[in-house]
Image: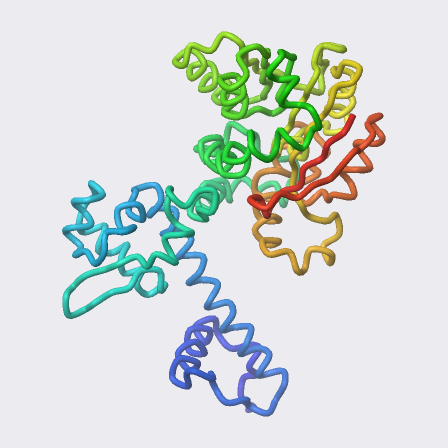
Length: 384
């Protein structure tokens, strides 16, 4: 009987291959001379790396939510108990978390002193003080999306989609991510994309944000430009309730929020500016929303749309730095929530080309398409 071919080895061989690579570090195992075997080994090692990196992402999310990264940053070497006390966490859980951070090469461990430290170079990507460069915020999407895996798998078989209501914490995480890409640069970099907009906001104009989520962009604008009037529409009652409560808490009387489907009719000629931040591709009827936005603009008005900076074709995204992440978020949220409403299901990677084409079909003239230095994920369309 011949030996079992390499490609039909049991799954446990994946871990064996990883151990072999470690034993032959730094160059890995010697080539076998068989290209197929070497390719299988290389891919198996990549899959083992995937397990580690995926697990690390979950623990990075926990480190962000518990404040452990913030507690470590700039503190120098800390023992488990000292870190637990500093972060207000249970020491046993902190010790296990530090195991993942140590083996994941995120923190530096001194076994003799029993201490752990977060290098400044790592804190620059993992702490709240590092925003808008805090990658730990985006790591939260993985457990949030993983929670609906069963529902999405069912859709693979039966079609349809998973509704917004099934996603716990999604709006909370999205608001935090939006704070990094939108709020951090809204006044200094995004508003100036529309020529003369700041002066018009100072004087007083009517502004609508479509798909406003928790409304944090509008709340910021309402504080900064008290003479202007702001409206935010979103399908999520939870998000709108949060936005309304925050507006009341801040005593803002120039902003209002409504649970409303923008595709079902916007006030004609009612707004001088309409914005949409990472929202159009999620819509059930994106073409209808764009047509309504065009109808809602007054003469001389502007539409400012932030959306994903990807291409429509898979092969054109091969070199995208977070292409796999985008398609994953799309499959487990953006596309499926649209399909749940019987919608188009464009997905996150609908493509800059598709976006321009749909804007023009809705009657817009696309004045500019810009990328901003702080936001590697999105592009900004200015249309009139």
